Image (cartoon, rainbow, N blue to C red):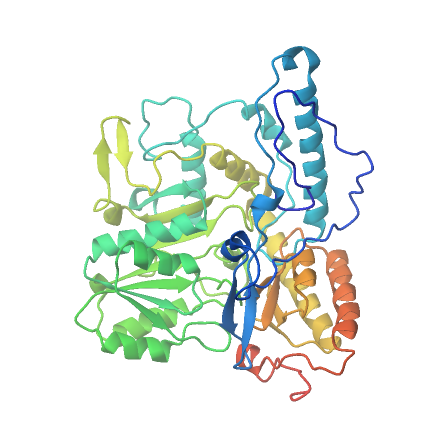
Length: 490
């Protein structure tokens, strides 16, 4: 079990279960040892297989070691058989209750130090607890009821209609479904594009989510990786060069509404203009908009460019567990009805239509989304977006005041800054890192008090890291000369 849980050994049928210690301190941060470096001729075979490190090039042009996460087998909790007399003694139930109680304390503690990943942890779904006793499955098409009666399609379609209004497409013109995650939305959107243009080339910026390139591998698509600007936004000059080199084939394009690392928003209007200038008519390209996080934030930002089906786009996807704040991974995928016909097949076994990536689909996710959308509404989301942007600017300004290079893209709540020198600090605050940079994604659950705690910890640790006279990395290559305040660019 990842976190502060200890490793447990398998129990024999004759052994008793001991309750976990009551001296557990939920406020203590239990160190999570990093995997040891793998060197030739040392370490066991098991260590060499599981504790791998990968060389990557850093911003300075040299190499550093990328440490993979800890081996979960070292902290796994064994599944054991109940004892023959357990129904009388209750030992197994007591043991499991103590494990779950301690796990909850671990979750509470780790949530306090969550900053690097775009999840809104501020939610309360107690009212939906009464529905957790049902196996709710929305298998098949959301708009066609199957023979399986325990589903939540009315809630799912209600959520889809809400997003259709947000992205300005009529009810009769769209098709969509609630996915299991943002990746599934990308896989579906790109698959629709591939089915519309079987010989099309997939174009995606180098800072697109890894699931986009996974889709290219899965679907055996020709893929062109487009360069980006320093902000992380797609470089339309390079995009134009690659389009002109492949004018004979249709274009399938992934547009980022917030890149993974820098939170950059691709200029949709400029992308469309570039396609048109290169001679691609609207019937020769398909655009999928990956709006995993910012796709739901941008509509509530004044003067932000609109993502709308009034423009020649083919699909949009967002994550439900990020800005919305669902307790399980989920997402929303919307495409045009005319496109989905090339992908769907009727399935007699289901008495429904198959047009989704997955077969069985979590019927609880629509309930959580429906509940949140009804509670917050457009005005509620607008307030939360404003809070996130305000707090993101606060963090960026405080970092720069402390002499730390930092960048914040317009329309974004992702603050990019120098990567902390120690991996233990990265793990403590659960930061997402790439090369010499790390980021904090300011979500509605991230308060100014939490940011102040992080800043104080970071500033104090930097004094220790660089007390030997070494210097922080130069981030000009990552954030630009205007945002880098390393010793060479102060």
